[in-house]
Image 1 (cartoon, one colour):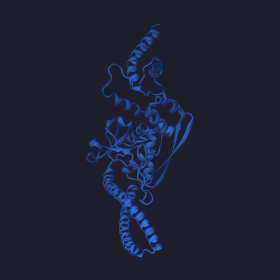
Image 2 (image 1 turned 45 degrees about the vertical axis):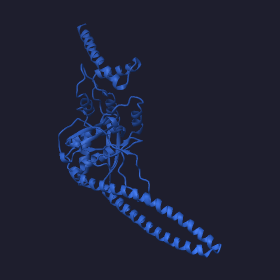
Image 3 (image 1 turned 135 degrees about the vertical axis):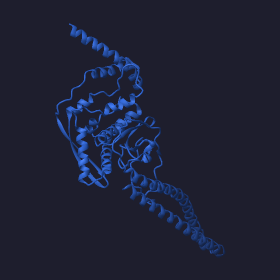
Length: 395
């Protein structure tokens, strides 16, 4: 009887703690009715009883493919449905008692980064990536880049991202194991996975969050003079392929997705460049750890500086070419009209006006040739800049 009484008192005490959490959940999730609070309460009640780590059952091999420096990599990884289900049932919201801690957000992200002690998946994955890099004679910095490329190549979950942006449903972040099992995720899911792997590789890492932009990225410990925001960590984008450590990409304003690093077309192949991009806003940094330092950013910054200069040049060329194209198009149209007029004067045998018109026509042709030559010269300069830009981003 005393044992039952003790259990009841424990449950009551836990419910009191849960009640303090519900208000915070309601505010964060926009819950304002009993019908919506009930599922949240049910979730919290499930968290009262700690879930034991399951047996490794229902194995499935997930194959990951990605490219790094022009080489295709492939890595099979054995995962388990039982472990995936285990993480699905783990807490997805932050619980606290009494006054909310000032560092609750750091603790919240840390919750997703703490794997069960019996789960060696991330350790094995990190070891596999290390071995793969060494097999291809990659340096330690390049193995960091290989790891980021691995995460970048995991499919972006457009449906989940759309639900988050529109406030539909109750989307939550995934534990790294879930992201691996589903082989897809949004910025937060992929960033948590990248942080987990790099920690196992021994690197200092951090989480960069941009609340106004609904975005998350990672920071990799690097020389402070080269670091992003002077934080001691270099920005690492996890959502789109080709983005280098230390370079913050722009976002497409319509899709809210980072812009993939792609080759540009020559001017005569593609005269309209995308101009619908925006920069990330204010950042907050969480879960900072100290470890090995990534030095590859030094060379990346040299390349970035040249890329920035090339982009400025190309922007100037685009503006110049736009004006020149209007001029030569108008001149060509005027020449056609003058030619038609000369033909009419010749047919009318009005040779006096015809001779005057011929002289004007010839002068117009010479001007058109000079302007067209100038236009083509600028196109050549633009295409040379594009070729250099493309060679740099291939690095």
